[in-house]
Each structure stands twice: as C-alpha cells, then as structure tokens.
Amino acid sequence: MKILPEKALDTRLAEGVARHGFRKWYERQLLSSHGHMLLALLSFFAMLASVEAFAGGSGGERLLDALMGLACGAIALWALRRYLYLLMRAEALAHQANCAECGEYGRFQVTGEDRRARMTQVRCRRCDHPWVIADD
Image 1 (cartoon, rainbow, N blue to C red):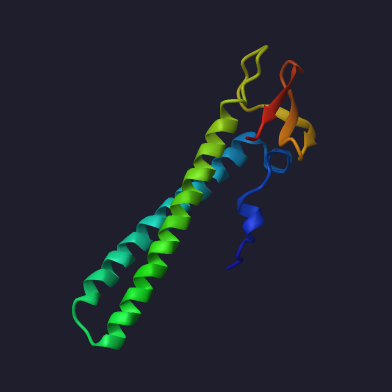
Image 2: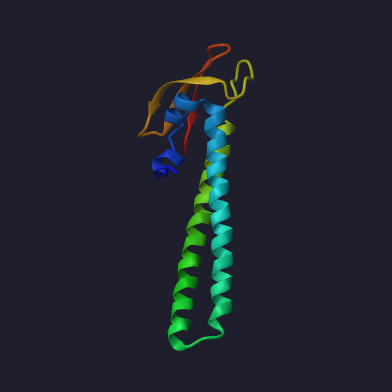
C-alpha cells in the first residue's frame, strides 16, 4: 500500500488541472475533504469513548483516558477545520470554472499562474476565451 504525501492531497489548482483536468481535481478535493470529515467523526466517537472509560478505573487509567480524550479532541478539531477548508476552497473554485462566453463548465486549460497573488490564468477549450480564477 502506497502512502501519499500531504502535498498529493492538497494540490494547487494549476498543478492539479494540468495533471488531471479540472473535474478530476475537483473530485479529488471533495474526496479528500470528506475523508477528513470521517476522521473528525471517528475521533469524536473515540473521545466520547474515553470519557465513558474515565468513570471506572484507577488514577493512572483515568489520566491515560483524559490524555486520550484530549488527543482525540485535538484530532477531531484539526480534521473538522481541514474538512471545511478543503470543501469551501473546492466549491469557491468550482463557482469560477464556467466560461463567461460559452458557458462551458470545467473545460479549460491553464495558461499561467501567479502564486503570490494566488491567481490562475485559464483559457476555455471550447471557445478559447481567457479568464482568471482566484484562489482566495
């Protein structure tokens, strides 16, 4: 089983579209965000289980249960923030993926990128109309 680096899960728009196309990039972003949602839910349930286990046990076991509960809570919060970030970013970029001339959705090629301004210049594959997609 090959483990993907974090960069593979959060690719820039220009890099992802050039490699896979917009629709596949968008699909991957949604899958990644929903994976983080699942992690948040599982971590929350693990935190609840550690709270339940806290009621019975010795002092050392209670301390371990409290530490596990805190760790699970921290993971749940991080995963929830990551889920919301990836989902909102994918949706914001998807709303900009329509060509203003012909109305074609998601069929464009990247013509340039300004990383500092977080803008990607694109051109419609159908009518050759250029526009800019802002990654705010």
